[in-house]
Length: 282
Ligand SMILES: [Zn+2]
Ligand SMILES: [Zn+2]
Image (cartoon, rainbow, N blue to C red; front, side, top):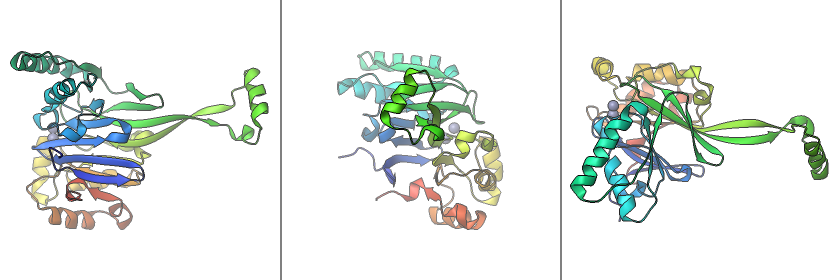
């Protein structure tokens, strides 16, 4: 039986499972990509996933780290990999060491410090690219990008032997192609992410939009989160086929959030929206 009742979304062959409520807990996993964005708690559904991509150190996003690592060890799995902003590696190590002493068992971990612009290989053709966000010191977001080689159009009609011959001659017959599959913003206030082409073109965008009511604009500003007015501006500039909203406040009922979203977004954008926390019990 699963330890947590998580939201479940399926887009083509990709599953997204998670839970995300502002200040309470955020964990968003994509098992087929072998990544879990943030780990506020450690539901047992995410334990087998090998890569945790941490955006920042707030408790509601990071408290599950030690349990995740320890439980993998307990189940005989390889040490989990935690990607985290490099300024957080020291404190993360201290937390893991403290838990090792408390628990009486050493907790193995593969910790990788990242900064904006870095890339980390998840699978032979799959990479996590790191970009900066505006939330806390060193906070980052991640895009998961598939890299393929595509044959140049002028060689597309050649036969197998002809291609082999050209390769022998050292002719470059293909070119690198990047397919951004998903971008996860984590917690952030408005940033013009349309400056980054791989974010604009990500098939799936997982974005925080914490606050909706007019009187909550100040709260968004103070906590460095997005308010619907900024989110609408951001989405306008992006081309993502699917937009999953996370980190919704508990101050506004889900039905009201949906109503405000419908009012704030043009229909062609609203149609692409999935509210993560509306997808529970399915
Ligand atoms: Zn948060
Ligand atoms: Zn935060």
